[in-house]
Image (cartoon, rainbow, N blue to C red):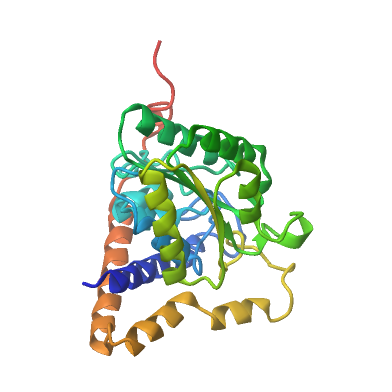
Length: 326
């Protein structure tokens, strides 16, 4: 399968997964909403619309490269190759999950694919620099990538991490997802500059802003950044314009959005645009697309079935794998 068609397939898989999670999240939470109730307890942050960022960047990584992600992590985990069944079981709080059901949706850890995420804003930057430093010390040409939202670029961890990475010429790429809102606060009301990529100048590293939520443009910029890091030339800061098609979290009333704003994002859906482009280039046919949609639907259905059929942890497992015994 052509690389561009593979990217399209992965984007479709992410979208199908997020749409499915949106439906499942409501189970057991009506008529009276309780965040602790239902199949999926806790908050849920979905990444529909932001697929190009994960797919466009991670296509250039190897399985042994490291990725740190934020509290909206599913698209990055799927693009990195995290097992969908075990990830879903973790989100459901089941024993077969990545962390035996103890981490949940915002704390997905998979050593096999070198993937991790955190519910703390800006928490992924320092570990990515640490992983990059370890690669350097080991004489390996691996790369670490830290993903975060534009709100995280106002955290101290962001600036501290850029400073050290630039100082050490560490093989790390910082990727900021600019989805226009940090929770409910517009970027213009929280950030003194138009583009966070401009902040790279303060650390004497390249800063690139990619507009349009275009997976091919993102891929091109990411390829240059990853190659630069892998060749020992140090970090790059990428900021990518994207859109979230769901709220900040499931249940978000989105009263802060302007009239028609969400509708305009949906009309500019990145998957629909990429599909049309692939068909115009005769790289994708209707029949092939039907096979792709059937395959991703089956993959998501299998993952959900695995999670539903998995057992919940027993009460005596609550402290297991959490604290070391004396």
